[in-house]
Figure 1 (cartoon, helix red, strand yellow):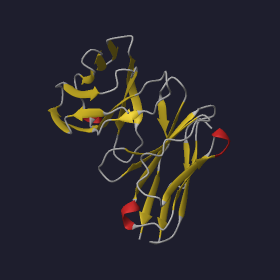
Figure 2: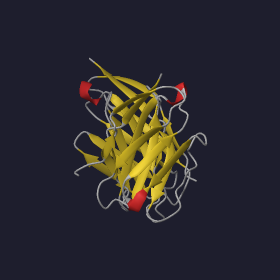
Figure 3: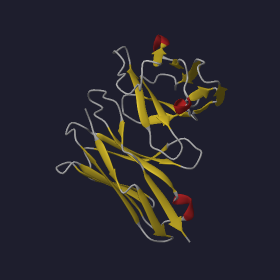
Length: 112
Length: 113
């Protein structure tokens, strides 16, 4: 596609359930990021994939969070046993080697 | 790893005035410095960037300056308009090592009439 695509756009889930968020990056982009943004706050780094290198998971807030990137393309962020504090907008971004990162529209997660 | 600090966190200017947002970075190897604008309810979008081989770059009313010695860079917006109201994020990375893009904490700019 022409840009970074995320699905779903909105997700409401019950506390304790698992959720999967999907990111489809721009074709050919080697780098992929996941960020979390709470209302009115900044960009909280979660995880960074770059080519075939081991991902930088240093931003994942707990072991309930995990992400994978299959075939160097699509990525899935999984949150297990969701908590109310997980409610936020989850943003995905991708880039090529010159650095410009392009963001998806985000997934708004609400845990009730 | 890279650490980016951004100031101020909020900025209010009158329409027509200039706005300046400043960022500092810690990794002297960083060579790419983009600025993103995030309007309410929308995704961050790249508005201007600068690479370490130049000291200044302009695009109409916006400009970015880079001081590699002091490890700081700034965004300048002249003749501000209400549509400039948004949150602005600076970032830094070393494209040579494909290090991750590290963002500042953001500046909320409010342009008042």
